[in-house]
Each structure stands twice: as structure tokens, then as C-alpha cells.
Image 1 (spheres, rainbow, N blue to C red):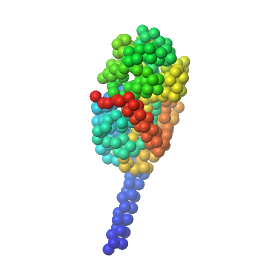
Image 2: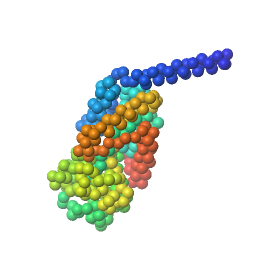
Image 3: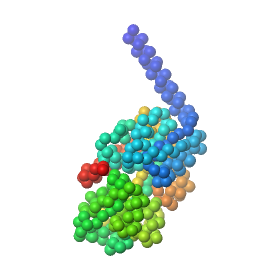
Image 4: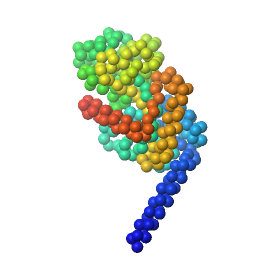
Length: 323
């Protein structure tokens, strides 16, 4: 009986694998949903919609963007984690997720356990800006002022654990300065505080802050990426300007629930790679300060693990806790 039982199990396993392979080969046959765990109108939402539109033709199916904000991306991400692993529900994620792996201890999911990496989309630099009344015109002058008055200056962010907050904490740690964090309910509120002079400085998305800096309502000192931004080529990077090795960007990527067939993951990765490498997409994003990213699923997995480790050090060394 045992040999027969084993043979039946093998036949069943082959049948299941064959069915999964057939499903992957015919994928997709219906609408694909991308859950965006952030509010409508922000960079994550905008780029998710742009990507979905560009993927419709090569995949032959429509894409629906579902905004499910709340709890610092936890609500929407949990909904995606609990969705069927069939390739018809995807998650738009950002470095908020890699920060949350350390910052939020009691989550209903684990990023690298409950999701399968598909592909990154793009990254955008942050712009280090100060209110024009602050008597500094370079990063070195800013650091000198901060060291002369420890914890006497402050910086704004859109909330604890956001990329803007973490960029500020990394800056403080690497520059060895004391600057007080002032969290806000949104990036718009934080921006307003800096423009009005209530808060002296912030790291903000270059896509939003560059026009404001150009208008003179804030003074831009540097960009946060590894290399200079194409839309502010005259501005040095933070690393060039006085904090060697500094790099902090806002990046976006696509995940699927764990267990999604590899053939589907590979198909989505290939199609996303084609979209982000199109000349017109590169130009459109470059004009906004966004740079396309291309990686295989395994490369993206390695990237995610590295980002989790990077921000874990910052969260722990700064003693950051969720309110």
C-alpha cells in the first residue's frame, strides 16, 4: 500500500504543479489590482497609476489602483498580504515598508516572509532646504550652526518613520549634530511649517520642493542621492557638501503575496522593466526628478534586505519609537 500511496501523492503533486504552470502561462486573464497603502495624489499613487496604464497594453488586461492608506502603510499592506497569491493583487511599496520592519514590532505581517519581490520602479532624491531667514548658504555652514547650538534647531517631517524623518535622522547621525525632529500630519503641513519659518529645515521630495526652492520661499542646500539630480545640477549632494557617504532617497517597488508562481513574478518583472526603460518614460520621470530602477526579482530581494538593515541601525541608534 505504501508504494501505491506514494505514487498517488506524486501524481497529485504533478497535477497541481501542472495546473499552476498552466495558469502562469495564460496569465493574466482578468483585471489586476495594485493596492497602494498611501493616500491618493501622492508620489506612490501617481506612479502606481502611471505604471498600471503602461502595463495594460503588453499584458492585455486593465489595472485598478486601490488606495488603502492608514497606520503608516500597515492597513493596505496587510490587505495585500492576505490576498490570493495568484498575481491578480499586487502591492505598491516604498522604503516606508523597510523602515517599518524595525520600527513597528507588532505588525500582522513580515515583509520578507509574506511577500515576494517583483521589481523596483524608481527613486527620487530629497532636497535639503532651510527657511531663508536661517543664516546659512551651505551644508557646512548649517552643520557649524547646528554644532554651535546643540538641539537648538529643528527639522520637519510628515511623521515618525516616514522617508523624510529617516533621512533627517540619518543626516543627524552621520553629521553628529543635534537637531530636534518636529513631526507633522502630512508632508504638506511640514512644508508649510518650513516655508512660514515655524520650523527651520527639512528633507523633502525633490519633485515637490524644487519649484518652491526656485521661487525663493525656501533655500535649497543639497540633494540626498548618490549623484547630483538632473533637475538641480548646480546643487551638490549632501555627501559632496559635508557628510561623506550620505545617501537617502524615496524609492518605490512592486511586491506580490508570498507563494505567487515564479513564472508570474518573472513575467511581471520583465514587463515592468520594459516600461521603465522606455525613452519617453525615462524623460517624463527625469523631468520630475525620478530615476527608473531595474533589477531582477532576486536582486530586488537583496536590495530590500539591505535597506531593512540600513534603517534598522538608524531606528535603533536614534531610539525612534512609534507614537
